[in-house]
Length: 213
Image 1 (cartoon, one colour):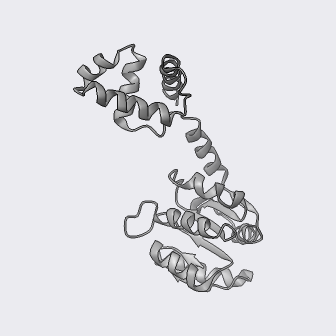
Image 2: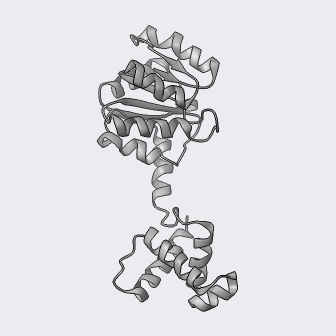
Image 3: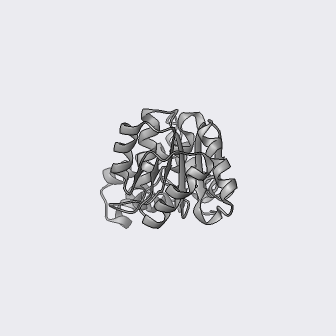
């Protein structure tokens, strides 16, 4: 089945895929339709865009992750104009990385090769565009990627050597509020809880590593 909000691309895939032995059992234009159609038709392979109505952010990707959580054996290919970092790693890690694909539309230059990649995923294989791999690996090396803007501010002030009281004055926060932000960022950086002084040092090192990205 196909989930693609662009009518031209959706109709193009509907016309193209049967030439390579695929039967299109459903074609929809939004994420809700994708989930409903999968539940109704039980397809062997889902091809989904990433950005779809209503928000045009990551609806297709989130729907794919939800579907794979419910059925890890469902073969899914995300066909996107760009690399959507949010939920992409969850999708690729689902089902132990089997029967999954992430392809960039602009880099699909040969329809025969495209059909072969779809067949490979339908048969349980994995196909990921090298650019997707590169961008996801770069993102995963950034230790600060999960921190909120405020947590980054607090961490930057820790790196400058400020105490909790000084950070509270600079950011116009209570010391309890600063302590909560520090606790959250240390947890997000996955630092051990046994030595608070060492955790602050490790957090500063993570901050400095993150500044290199």
